[in-house]
Image (cartoon, rainbow, N blue to C red; front, top):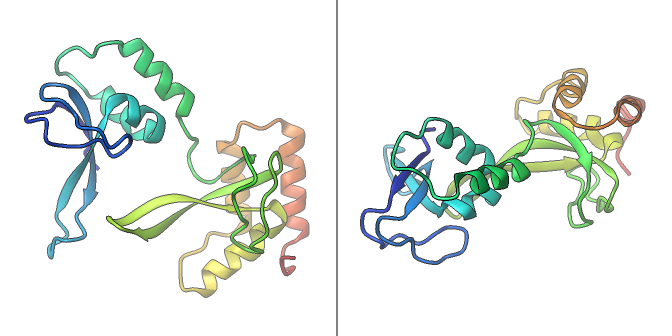
Length: 193
């Protein structure tokens, strides 16, 4: 998608992050998306303050910032530091759960704070059309989650392919990656708890 950074032409748009108005002339981030109200599947934009987008859409903003050649950005170094702090790895990846709010998509049990989890990309229908987010799984439930996705008619990757991608995209120590792989392959074909 063609996300963009541009000066706000009128000051009427509100930021999707903080809900405050984006002042006329202030640089804003335009997140391109498929308009759910368009019969032809036309594209539209959701607008963000640059600082708000840096924390919520760091990857997308970084991409737009790379191709930006407009007026100078105030505090660009601060903006780039905020983006770097919020960049997310490519899907799928493994990480330690930051809190205990996420639930495993296979067994529906909470994933405790600090536990290893695998994040896979999922697309879901939101109020403004299709949106992307993470679907989390315990390593021991990963094979069951992938099998369930295949049963739902979705194209589900093979466990070995997912584990190779997780290894490439994750910033975990080698011993934790080996344990995650062992847990995922040991549970291959098992039913989640």
